[in-house]
Length: 88
Image (cartoon, rainbow, N blue to C red; front, side):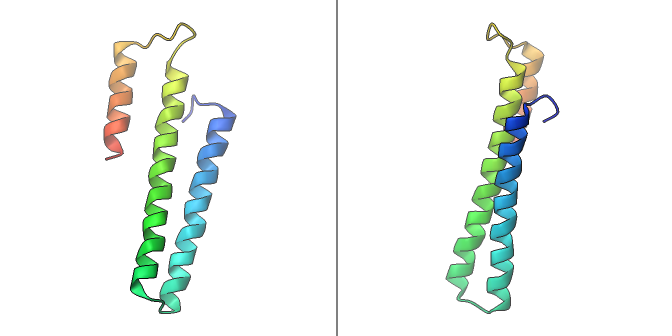
């Protein structure tokens, strides 16, 4: 995300911090021997938050790759395609 804006970086950092907080909740739930279904639901929220952070990173890269005319070079498209595929 070296080419993205400060607001993009802040948004991604906030998403990752949220996932970090949710993961801390999972750890606490495990230590408290909470019901497995509740722990798995919280873990699913962590996974979802990290997925959203990844998509936000790729979206920021996309925005920074598009020039003022909306043009993207074939090399940039290849790069972006690889980034999207890495999310799966």
